[in-house]
Image 1 (tube, rainbow, N blue to C red):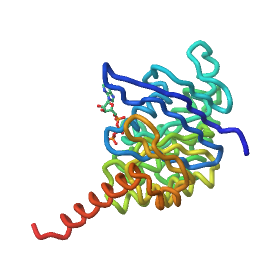
Image 2 (image 1 turned 90 degrees about the vertical axis):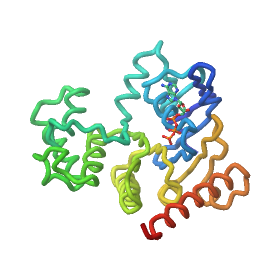
Image 3 (image 1 turned 180 degrees about the horizontal axis):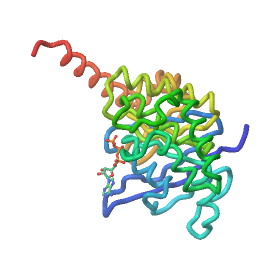
Image 4 (image 1 turned 30 degrees about the horizontal axis):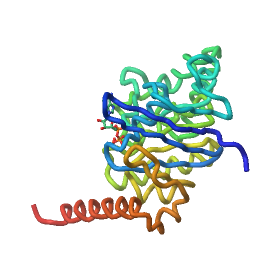
Length: 259
Ligand SMILES: Nc1ncnc2c1ncn2[C@@H]1O[C@H](COP(=O)(O)OP(=O)(O)OP(=O)(O)O)[C@@H](O)[C@H]1O
């Protein structure tokens, strides 16, 4: 079996006396869609922020493509940033820039390409996401689904090997949630990147992921295939599945009950 593209060992993070992550171990293999599930407040975003260098972990190691990421080795961090990208739940698009300008930005910031080459590659990314006809539009002139595709175009324009998705469907209705997961699965195959996703959306994650993990109580309590997750009798997994189902039933009842 190939070496993991991303390997996390013993990652810990506390805020004051509150230990949010108490020793995360995880391996993501090249070409996988790896999804971390977990209840609200479990620490999914904190984990991604540690990986993205937005916050610093208290302990633990992260290896990318076999190399240890370390502040004392800035080249390792630069290489990681160059080969990975993030898609945030808010999309983080710039309202004052057109779709093309938004997608061109990472190339302007991280490469020495000429303006002409940047424009060509940005247009190619828009084409890959089938939104090239909107190149001149501003994000506010695009639908929510198109904005999500625009954010993905920007995330893949640098041809990253690993894309991190932070709750990519937050705030979307069930139909749009499905569409976003379908989009991730489709382009992940087409563009051949590895994906690490954190989300609450269990049914969608089980359909689109190669591997799922459950983060609870500061640790990964489960790590396996979606089929294993669905059939697991581990109390922590059944408890999480039951709570998600109960929430779904409550929401369905609210939608069908008269106002
Ligand atoms: N900068 C911070 N300072 C103090 N506590 C923080 C900080 N960031 C996160 N936390 C705490 O860490 C815990 C985990 O937060 P996190 O946002 O990672 O949860 P999550 O699993 O992503 O939840 P959700 O699914 O609701 O987004 C929470 O208790 C949160 O209050």
